[in-house]
Length: 83
Image 1 (cartoon, rainbow, N blue to C red):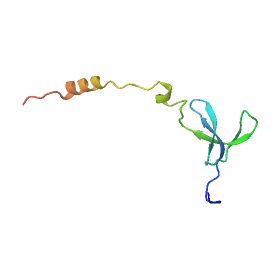
Image 2 (tube, one colour; image 1 turned 90 degrees about the vertical axis):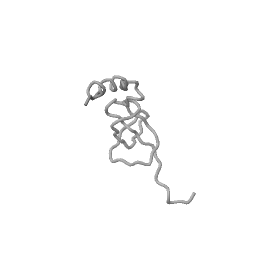
Image 3 (tube, rainbow, N blue to C red; image 1 turned 180 degrees about the vertical axis):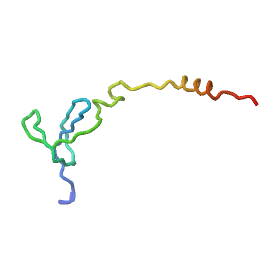
Image 4 (tube, rainbow, N blue to C red; image 1 turned 90 degrees about the horizontal axis):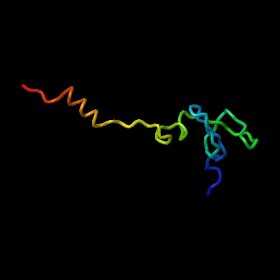
């Protein structure tokens, strides 16, 4: 690898404020905020709006759309019209 062309890859804490969940991983993103992690070290902190802890698909709280009900509702509203 050529030196000087790759971004700095370092540990970063991502925090999901909606679920009060944080995890430590490595990333190239930078941040002016920092947080002291469980191991006693200070890491850059990146706040995210949604993560696997709060996403409906991963938590199992997703809504299931009733497509049959939607079709029936459409048929009632706009069903066959007579001339």
